[in-house]
Length: 474
Ligand code: SF4
Image (cartoon, rainbow, N blue to C red):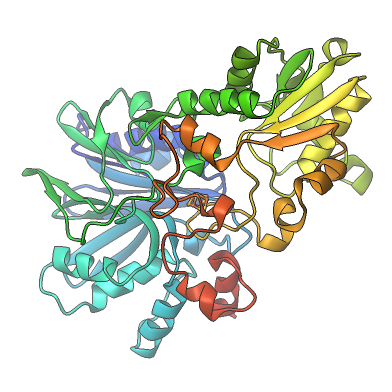
């Protein structure tokens, strides 16, 4: 998400062009679709489209059609659920108080239950997105002011939400009480900016002021800046996976450099799971910082044994199964002259289904590696995420089905090791994980979910909202 109030130019589309740049820097957070809504002081304007930010918002005619010094945007994560345009954010509604645009990062874990209640009370939904539940809760709240209605709505939702909302009175940014998903505040020549990661501030030349704190609601307008704490304080549980994989390595998340944490994880791995080897090879790009950390801590040279092509499109048409099996080589190719005869420590950020890991190990063997030792910069992913990261259901998570010995055989590695959960916390700068009150959400590794999973508990078998919403739609 990216929002800007008071863009430092009166050119038509000024705020929208900042939003487009910011969203481009956040493209890794969602590649399915993108949208921008602007406010020109009299009316809201929206453009939403499937596909990447570039390809839609690099067009001058589209940016010019989003006038005003206020704008917000969103990139949508690719899920197995309904990918229709109606779910692309920002979502917009004309409420009794005026226009209301909302963008959401996260997942509401009681959205189905709330939706059923709202349906019974007469609400008619335009999308199958969990985010629309918030709009209807605001619209039907008995409180008087928009801010009170909004707070009333948020007190009914469970799960993860970082939100940016735009109204004629101001832009509202909010992080759920646990602070599961990130959100930062920046400033540019008198304009306030909210963004999911600091890289979006960097790219527009804004100054990073601070993170929006868990449970904090910030309202910016032409009258300035106000901070509210509408929720009862609880110990925060920000997502640890942002540091392992999701955020860009050049971002600062909750005061910590993502790059530094990833290097620290690699160093922890080297200490916990050493191995005699000739070179350390990252699976690019996400395994690179951890591989640097592993190499520095172990003294084994870091080498680029796999080269990644940056030109592989997700929609590449593959005419047959035989060709599809070659697709991994289109994205990653072994640097054979380097690999031949070497004992390799291969570093990746995680193992999810295991199919990519299997192909990468095979690629190293085909290139003549003498031994392939796989080291993973996260603990085994044994549980699904219900807070906005698109992990598959448990049946498709390799580590939920097998122990490490069986996984080693499955991916055909000579050895396999994961960083421990304690090692991950040490890499984050913590002395240890507090088992009574973990400092982060780490549920995909531990199964210790920090909120109720109301929709999941009502459903059997367990599913993600993106799948359940299909049933709501049908
Ligand atoms: S379950 Fe995992 S990916 Fe999801 S919020 Fe928690 S730590 Fe992050």
